[in-house]
Length: 163
Image 1 (cartoon, rainbow, N blue to C red):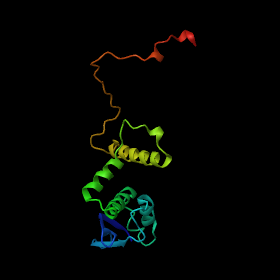
Image 2: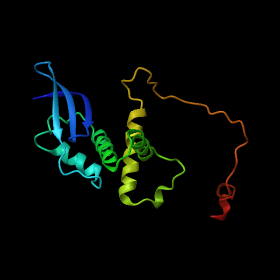
Image 3: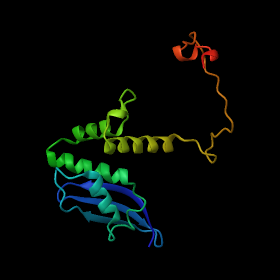
Image 4: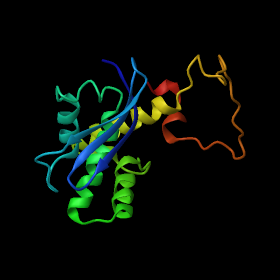
C-alpha cells in the first residue's frame, strides 16, 4: 500500500504523532494516530524518532516523513513535558537547528558534530541548484567586486628559493 504524506503533527494529551495521508489507490485522505509510549522529559528525541520510523506497524506510513521532522515533533513533546511554552520550545529548537559560523566545531563531541554536519548537509541539499531547476545556469562565472586592496598573508610572501 502506497501512502502520500500530507501533514504530520503531534498531540500532547495523550501523546501521539498524527499523520494525515492520502491513499494512492483510492485517493482518499485518511488520518493515522500513532501513540507515543514510554517517552519522558529525559528521553532522547532522535532515538524515539528512529524507533517510530522503523516500527513495522508505522513504517509504510512514515516513509515520506523525514527523520528530522519526527525529531522536531518529539522535541515539542519533550518541551511540553518540561513545562515550557510552545514559543520557548520553538526558540530552543531554532537554536539547536541553526549553525553559528563563529562556533568552533573542533571543540564539539562526536554526537554534536554529527548533528551539525547533518544540518549542514540538509541546508546544502536545500540550496543546491540542480540541472532540472528552472534558473540553473551551466558553467556560471561570477566576478566579485574588490573594493579594498587584498591583504596578503605571511605564508605566501616568502620566496620559493627557501624550499
